[in-house]
Length: 201
Image 1 (cartoon, rainbow, N blue to C red):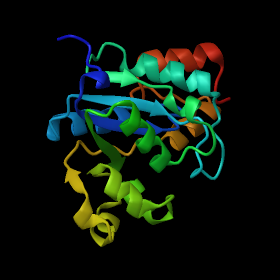
Image 2 (tube, rainbow, N blue to C red):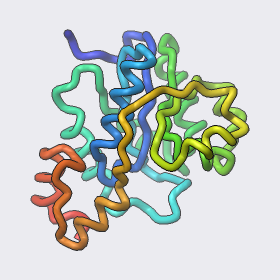
Image 3 (spheres, one colour):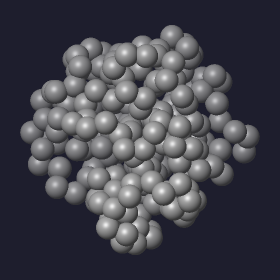
Image 4 (cartoon, rainbow, N blue to C red):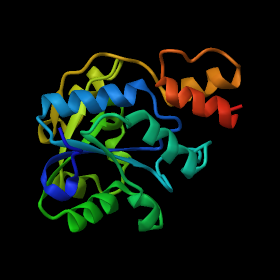
């Protein structure tokens, strides 16, 4: 199968995040969305200036780009984008979606979220406008099912099933800081990159 490209149109998922670092939970979420929603591809977009985190990313943007590229290499349904670097200003999801729709006018975009994001969706920049601009598909996550059911946005989004995993970038960073093993939590290529670069120490 040739490399998928959002320029060719079709149904595409938007997989955004700090990816600090990208881990197997991200990849399981993307793959589950791809299969259950019959997407043609998933566009991974590392955030350049994330406005919703209480702290800035630990790793530099270029390192997060490189780690994401390593994590998705070999999967021709995945693509990497640096579009947030070009947008400038706070990396609001709404701004990103509008840029994607302008740049890929024939593509049907679906925003992929974990259930943890739906729990705080009210705090996002203009959530009601995001709902109007793009289809939102949400994967389950341990501990967030009840919050999902209580969300006022529940009827405006589509939920999909996925293998349950409780991996988080925060936990991985803490393990790395403690020189503990992260085997099985992220792709081996990403783990080697982190080790070689001495990140998250």
